[in-house]
Image (cartoon, one colour):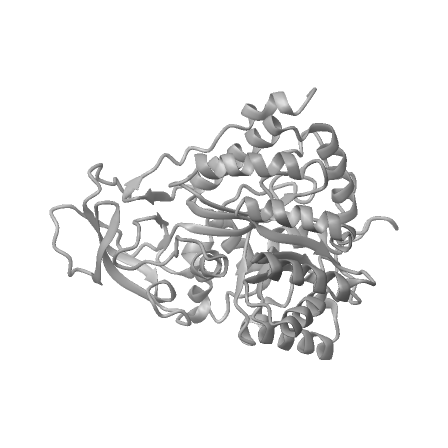
Length: 437
């Protein structure tokens, strides 16, 4: 059955199945059958199914409705470079070196701008309303990409709310002059202080310096931590220690945290307890982590022994706020992806095993919507409530298994009460950036 959204933006979605977790009961895994009244670009009212009175009722017959998605961890500056710079061996180090070479050769402002805009058009068509991206800060890139990002944030205002974190490596963080320059540029852009480290002897110092700089400048923090299969990686624990010791009160997000899953139970419990005490939120990147981690072909053909993801279920059970996100898109760190929040949820259920018991599974819809929105402090809350913007994604499925069994390519995306064009941009638009075919 095709749903046709009235062009005037005044109607009722009746018999809509919405996760109770997105209707004000965060821990619930239930689906509530409701009527959603939409008027003047807003959700005007919510009531039990069949209660709304309107000349224009669209009967969803129990199909599921979610709020527009929030993608907490992406890399818009890297996106879609795979055709010109592949990962030679599929490893994390292979990705790092490939991106370094491509950045030095190609990342002029015009190149970054066109790829960013292409990525955002994909995200928008899939039903995403807010995105946080990490931006590579290796000089002179910090003087190019922040300008592009600020222009894109203005261009996309009202469609996708954008945030950005300046991404730097551990050696940069240890260089006080470089750290301050990048932090000041992030502050000037209304950005976030970012970074990446895993196995490093100076991790305690790195985290203390970064937290101190963020505290001095009033910046929030979003880091790549322990994106590694090495159980000796301790960046996450050092981050928690630095936050607790300093009394830092800003928002802190740790991404990846892969090593936590290969540490012994005692170590993992200790780290998780510290993360909870420090108030650090954790974002897992299930698709990219599974793609990169435990990939080693140096001794012949080999199948990975683990999924690469962190202990997300244990973190959540310990009271840590968690989310899942896209990460990279068609670049050397991840050859696939399209900034589709539903794909992240669907694949996350398979990879992270948050789909059982299925009576509780719908609470996890918050991991691509309301929880990352709250973690990031977006203006968009990604909840379905009276007075909220009518930014919704209508999906075909009345329960968890119907919802998750198909990619939902025929979804209806509503923004400000009106259906948008969900046609995806053609990859051919970027052909002239990719060099000889």
